[in-house]
Each structure stands twice: as structure tokens, then as C-alpha cells.
Image (cartoon, rainbow, N blue to C red; front, side):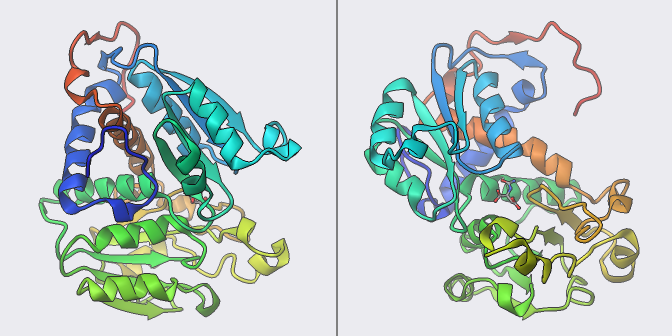
Length: 338
Ligand code: NCD
């Protein structure tokens, strides 16, 4: 794909070469994200960060990524404080905000809304999550993390990957985008573990099978997570249910802790989660007793989000080759972070 000036709305836009390009640029962002070097390549540029659903990581890491490239961030969070609460259309908001920004990241509860917004925008728009549909930057950082974790184990190839996805696969947009991304690779085994009512949408299962992948569906976690390289846990997407009581039917169904891990997983199985993990006792999908497990990659995964989002901004705003020019070393305390 041509990155320069493009919207990033869906994983379907990417081919395998594009993914390699994003990862290669993400690697080059490490000195900046890891606070060794400072660059001002986006000095003067403005990111409009528009989040109409709760977010910590995605909103802050997009903002940090832009700041780390030297740009400024303007934000709106929630409908209550936005003119959408006064009845403004997505079209009008897009026309206006794209006059104030050089690039926009948007999260919205309605599937397809970010694409609708992008169609009216005068600047590139990135999908920070549209309802239960897609979360492309998360899938990219997830695959980037998988690749890095496997490289750490001495494996260089994503082909032949074995991954279990656990939890709310019906409403979880991160796993939807991740499955689409895995379709670009070869000979992947995808174990889909969810309550029957929250299974992965049939169209995505079909896409995986058409890509030649092995798909196994189960409603039981123990046993199904043996023989996988990656165990990717997800949260019950409470906000997509009619009410809390309905979400409670599924909350806590799959709990991974150290004992279950030791009993079922291979010694190197990497544990991932897009976060936030629901740590309330009634859910506790990834127990805190995993925190010292070296294969718990969830915080490395969140750190990687900054690298991948910096790469996307650098590619879309076409500054990749200028990042290292005029860079300097940092001059503040930066020990022990990464
Ligand atoms: C995810 C999301 O918003 O889809 N969070 C994130 O962006 N890292 C997953 C979730 O909220 O459960």
C-alpha cells in the first residue's frame, strides 16, 4: 500500500510486505521510544486524538508516539464534552477537526463510524477501535510482539505459528483484526476458546480457513491451551452487552493463573492480552500470580504499542527518512525503564 497520506481503517488494507515495512520502521523507533534519543521530525504537526469510548493505552500511546516524534496532541474524550452531544454529525465533526489537525486518531462505539468519519476528513484518519469491528493498530502491535517474543526464543518465522485466543471473541475487535492479519501468513493454527454465545464471527473463521489455516473452536480452556506458542486472553466486552448482568454470565469463565499455566502450557508459551485485564475477583482473567512469569508479555506488548504507532505516523506523514536527522541524545534521567 501507499502509506503516505493514507487512512488506516482496517487490517484488510495491508499485505505482507506492508507489515514488514511497519515492523522495520517500528524497530528504528526504539532509541526514541526508549528515551535514548530525541527527534523533532514532526515539530509543528498536530494530532487530533478523538476518543469517544474509554481508553488508557491506545489514547495515551498514540499521543506519546506523536509527542516522541516532536508533534503536539489535541484531544477530545467522551461524547459529553464534544459537540456530537449537541447533535453534530460525524461528517461535520470530520470537516472541522481535519482543519485543525495533520492526522486524526478516532475511537468510536459504532462499527464503521471511523470509516464514515474518514470519508469526510481532509487529513489521514487512524482507527483506534470502531465498536466490535476492528482495532488495526492493536493487531499490528500484537503481531510485532509475537514476532519479537518468538525471536527471543530463537524462532525467526511467523509461518507455522500456533495461537490460542481466549474469551469474548464475538465482540473483541482486537482478535478480529488479529485474525485478519494472521491470514497473511502460512500454516497458522488458531485455537478459538470462548463461550458458545461469544464465538468468533463465522466470516472471520471462514477467512482463516480460506487462508489454509487450521481452526479449532472450543468452549473449554484447559487442554486447549497446550501446544500453542501464544495464549492471547481477552476481556468480556461488557460495554457491548445489553446490561451488566448479561456480561456477568460470561465473566470469569476463563481464568489463567500460574497453576493452570504450569499444568497445561508448554514452558515457553507466551501470555498476551490487549489490556485492560479485568482483575476484579469475579473475572480475574489473568491472575496476578503470573506477574513474575517471564513469558507474561502483556507489558512488553503495551510498550511495543508506542513503537508501532510511531512507525504508522512516520509512514503516513512520510518522514521515515528524516527521523534520525537533527536527533540528539536525551539529557534527563532514563535508567531502568526498558
Ligand atoms: C482493547 C479495546 O479497546 O478493544 N483495549 C485496547 O485498546 N488495548 C481491548 C479491551 O478493551 O478489552
